Amino acid sequence: MQLEIKDLSKTYPNGVRALNGVSLTIGTGMFGLLGPNGAGKSSLMRTIATLQLPDSGTIRFGEIDVQTQPDDLRRVLGYLPQEFGFYPNLSAEVTLDHFATMKGVVDSGQRKALVASLLNQTNLHQARKKHVGTFSGGMKQRLGIAVALAGSPKLLIVDEPTAGLDPTERHRFLNLLAEIGQDIVVILSTHIVEDVRELCNAMAIINRGQVVVAGDPREIVEALRGKLWRKFVAKADLTAVKAAHHVISTTLLAGAPVVHVYAEQNPGEGFAAIEPDLEDVYFHQLELAGLAEAA
Ligand code: ADP
Image (cartoon, rainbow, N blue to C red; front, side, top):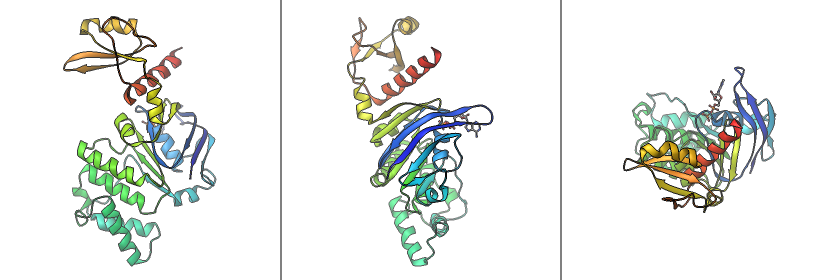
């Protein structure tokens, strides 16, 4: 199954153009949709999930035309939105049982087996009798995934799932997604570069409603090889360095500023070549997009 998004645009009534000609082809596996806050990720996710209509463009999932056959899409869709609520006084087990019923699993024996398998898969078996209101952020996210999986989706959309999780919970959650993502189409929307680097075999970066780069993360990173340079600079020199070079990021290492510079050749004294990583790509692409806009 493949998700085919063509030339999707959406302007909200307040005049904000959230999507501006987005085209993407997304196959089986983990797809990372990376972009800063306000880039249009949620707008795209909600449109794919049939929660809102675009102004123009098309979305197909296999044989399904998402706009004209929303019910068909919903049957194969699992969606974990950014914000979701559970009844705090219900246990995880009862919550899942409830959702499985809503998904049409009416046979009680079948439902019991499904709930048990979902609890195991999301590592919530031990906590199955606990009230959901007492769950940590990570446990809630895993329960959200269990709910999304209750309908055996072929397309799973998760919107910013790792925001607010501590490192252990985040890893557990990403590992869970990686397991699920082997057989179905999973779209992970995130502003965290690490999420994509660790997990996704395909990705796109979006900024201001437009796709700025899409493809295999390894190839996208490789394209920067030989063009990235690093230099430690004194704080007082930072402005001059930025004026003289194409600085894509400034970070601190043990309190000292380090600039990453994009250049076809060694930009000069004190610069050392560095291995590009996905974060460099991200900052470089966002900067290019910003420059294009300013031009
Ligand atoms: P992201 O998920 O990447 O943070 P969003 O899709 O939420 O981006 O938002 C893209 C832009 O559209 C932002 O400028 C946001 O303020 C605006 N926006 C999102 N939803 C609405 C809405 N329902 N009405 C008006 N503007 C919206």
